Image 1 (cartoon, chains in turn cyan, green):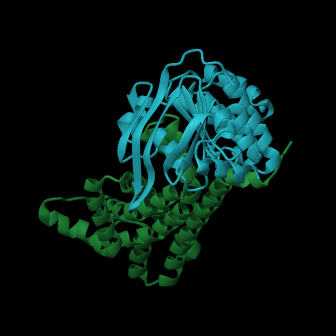
Image 2: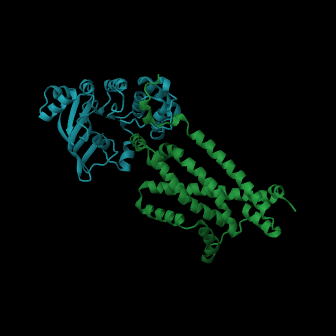
Image 3: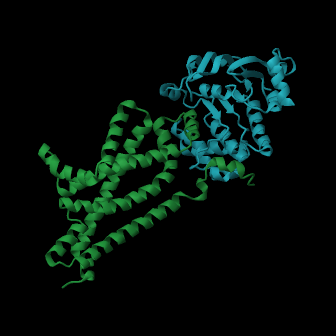
Length: 250
Length: 230
């Protein structure tokens, strides 16, 4: 768990609603996140967690409500996305590394194109980040040559290279074999300890309990309960939260 | 009377082959650029441009290329637009090719995993940068093989230009034959030239495909099943 250097709000969601046709996938979602805070969103499959992250990232539009990140309103419109210019990072379940680029090209592409960082500088930073995620020897490998765990660690380095103010983790370990999950969770833990603001969707409850300051429990597109992680684990106020936590840890 | 080899090695036939090659390369280059523009419009989601694009593709894929060729050479002058035979042929062949290349390029773009675009978007890349640096390079793997076929098809299709008196390989062969009735040797000599050109194209296509499709371009999703490679 990390100390909050400042407690100012970085992310604010108010009364978000989203429908796919006649199905409501997000229903009256509101929550805030402070700078440096690690929030974990849990809930069963189809509860809307991943959709919520995609909306925060500006990949999907919401139908009602507002998402405000660092004073800017987030939508999926071009202008809004361009204005963010990579300040929100995202790590995907399926890694989504650029298949035609080497590891270092994957990491330096956005800094060079979006931030106009000169090549040499971007590459030095990329090498530092690869060292941080323990993959210094894979600098010139292609994604197809990496294991799942390695791919995801490269994806994390790629997100970090943009110096984002917030990183979203969308089931970052769900596609991995159990023995590869650990290495990715360790890297995530390190990032949180470094003070990065993160919003994590995960099914790894022991990791959530250890790493997150605050936990949000969702069901059927709604937030059932949110609060300090330990508090939620030990004294859930809602019966549904208790039932979910029991099922998961069983 | 001259035989097959005399025709085959004659300057006349070599120039004809050069014109056929020029016609093919010019039409393909313009056709690829045109097809790329049409494909980008098709995937852009811009409704206003979508309709004329669909109309264009419908028109040029739905009518015979021979008709398009004759129309540009014979009908357009009646509307005040006059081109030389060679230019008319390049216009007709490249307009027609654009319609086919548009579909090939669009299919290539569609084949690139949507997650690649999501990742690039979140990283802050602009739409044009995503297309240029992320989507198109990966689409190439699917675009190149059919484009190679289009090149070979174009080489043969260019013979249609002889109808509007472009001095290509086929027309030259026919001219000589109609003077001395030696159809066998002249047409076989022309066929030999076509075969040489298509063989070179096929070889180039294979080389390019091999260079594009090496193991390092494996899809990243597959790697999850590979296991630790350390």
